[in-house]
Length: 203
Image 1 (tube, rainbow, N blue to C red):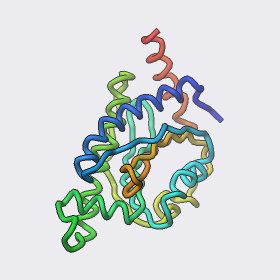
Image 2 (image 1 turned 120 degrees about the horizontal axis):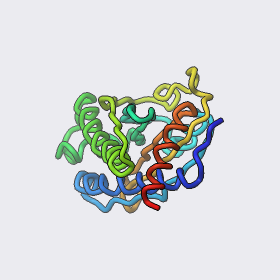
Image 3 (image 1 turned 180 degrees about the vertical axis):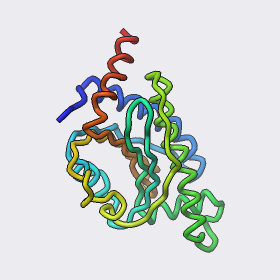
Image 4 (image 1 turned 135 degrees about the horizontal axis):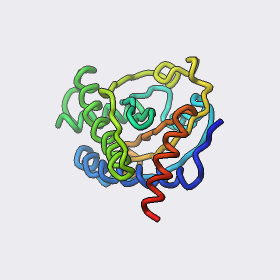
């Protein structure tokens, strides 16, 4: 199993913290409240285990916006929220917090827009600061259980995976979720090489 070194994990955590900070202003405007971040957390575990630890606090009914990262290395990044919190955010985004609920299609479009901003901010910060070319797929919004969304029984569920996640929310805990960044074992050497060059340039 390839494991990113502690220094590389710390760099990724710092860069994602910067990216989430940039995205925070957007979320604060959407939900009309102060946005707070947790300390970034990292671990290496089988993919299904790493994802399960992140999402278990959010309940059984989840909404996600995910994007595939490609280019200098491959990875996955996802915004994950409890469905009830995602619903609240979508209504705020549509300026409809006190009116009738939005349709499922409009809600999914609003969450895609929010996820696009937050996930792009993280990956763009990583790409620009490390100096690597990264592209992202079109955002995909889904609702369901963790197993249905992330494929806990799929062929890649047992792959050793580096998982970085940052929890976010409003003060008071009314709305919250997590952003996860997942790097599989096969891609870890490329990530490590890019970060090694970045650290060398800083020295």
